[in-house]
Length: 92
Image (cartoon, rainbow, N blue to C red):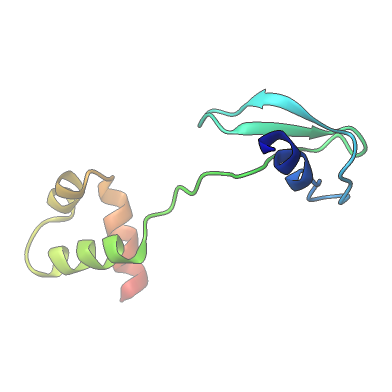
């Protein structure tokens, strides 16, 4: 059953074809890539999200305005300090 559902989900985002889709290895994050034989487009079925959620952004901004440095916020939340500074710029 899992294979049937996986084949049903495969449709090319460019041409929309469901036939002629084949596995094409994995990308750097380990997600399966698919190759469309019709338009030669390579895509992933379920790409991983690399964005931080809104709660984390709000917490980082709140910590920064409460007196913790941008570098300190980055160390506490295990992220890059430039993320914190970019969120602060957008917030202002």
